[in-house]
Figure (tube, one colour):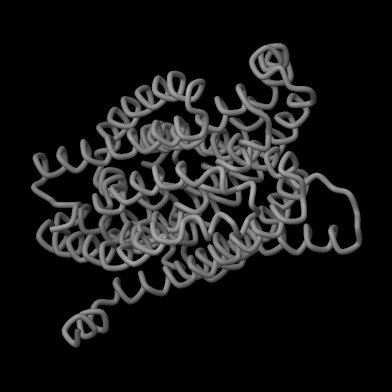
Length: 432
C-alpha cells in the first residue's frame, strides 16, 4: 500500500490523472444531478426528445469536427518536441475554418434534400424541426469541443476538464431548474442546444486570453489545410464509427418506439459512462505524453508509461464496476420507477464497458502513434456488425437488443485493437 502511494507521489502523470478523474467525477455527479432532475420533473417524452437530439448532435458534430479535436492533441506533442507550441494557434485557426465550412454544408444539404427522407423513416410529427434545430447548433458544438481540446494540447488539462465536465452542464442545469421553479413551460432540447452557443463564446474568449500569453507564434508552412485534413480524417472516421455505435441504437429504437423508451434506454447508457470515465480521464493526461514520446522515438519510456496508465485504469475501475453491478436497480429507481424497465439493459451494457476498461487505452494509442488508419478499419468493421445486430435484435428485443449489439461491438473492437498493437509494437494496452 505504501509502495503504491509512493509511486503515485513520484509519478506526475498519475497525480495529474487522479486530478482529472476527480474533476470528471464532479462532472458526473453534476450530470447525474441534471438527469435526476429532468427525469423527475419533466415528462419522459420531453426527456426522450432531448436524448434523441443529443445523439444526433454528438454524431454529426463529431463528423463536422473531422477528428480535429483528436489531431490537435497529436500536433501539440509534435510542436512541443520542436519547442514551438505557440504555433498550435495557427493550426487551430485553420481547423475553425474547416469546421465552419462542413457545418454550413450539412445544414444546407438537410434544408434542400433531407426532409422527406426523415419523414418516411421515422413517421413522427415535428421530428424534422427537432433535427433542423440540432443541425443549426453544429458549428457552436464543434467550436466548444475544439477549444476545450486545444487547451488540453497546451497542457492546460485541468482548465479544459473544468470546461468539459463542469461548465458544460452547470448552466444547462441552472436554466432547467429556474424554468421549473417559475413554472415556465419549455422544451429541454431547446435549453440544451442554446447552451452550446454560450459555451462556444466562453471557450473562445478563454482561448484568446491564453493566446495573448504566448509572445511567439511561429508560422508553420508545412502544416497546410490538406495536411490537417489527411491527419485528422482517419481519426474522424474512427470517432464517427464510435459515435455511430453509440447513436445508431437510439435512432433505430426511435423507429420502433416512442420517446419514453429512448429516455429509459439513455439513462442506462449514462450510468455505464461511470466506467468509461476513468479510461477517458487517464487518456486525457497520457495522450499528449504518448504522442511526444513516440515522436522522439523513446519507445521504452513509452511502454513504461502505457503500463502505468493501464494499471491505474484497472485499480480505479474495479470498485465502480462492482458497485454498479450490485446496486443497478437502486440507481435506476432514483430516476423514477418507470426507469427500472432498463434493469437488464443496464447489466448488459455494464459487461461491455467493463471489457472496454480492462483493454486499456487502445484507441488513444492508435491515434497518438500514427496508426489511425488501422484503427479506422477496425472501428468501421465493428460498426457494420453493430448496425446489423441492431437491425436484427431491436425489433425483437427492444432495449435489450440494442444493449447486446452495443456491448458486443465494443468488446470486439477493443480485443481486435489490443491484439493488433501487441503484435505490431509489442505493447500491452491491456492489463498486465
